[in-house]
Length: 137
Image 1 (tube, rainbow, N blue to C red):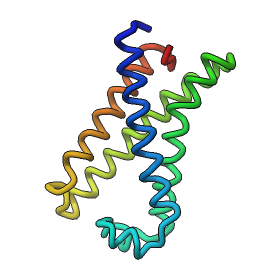
Image 2: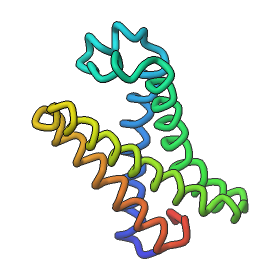
Image 3: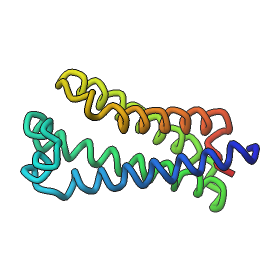
């Protein structure tokens, strides 16, 4: 992988892993009332099961974009390379659904910056990992 692509890929990985870990942990552990008070009004309508499932997907994606490339490169688990690509693609899909949901609820004008930033970062990471076979080194 070329050095510029490695730097961009790891920067995106760090940003996405931190963002999705924090978001997923909050959605998984906070009471539903706390989530609604924090500006996530959609959680009341979506329900606890959907909210916790989204949290689990965000946490799995955050772990996958870090652990799969590391396992492939340093432990020799070459079978893990596609899992990193799948994790990044999954985070991209989560953001597509989030954008659609925020547009439907009339909230996109308040959330578009973070939604589009996370979508773009996840999409670019997906492409980089796909092009370079799931490797970040």
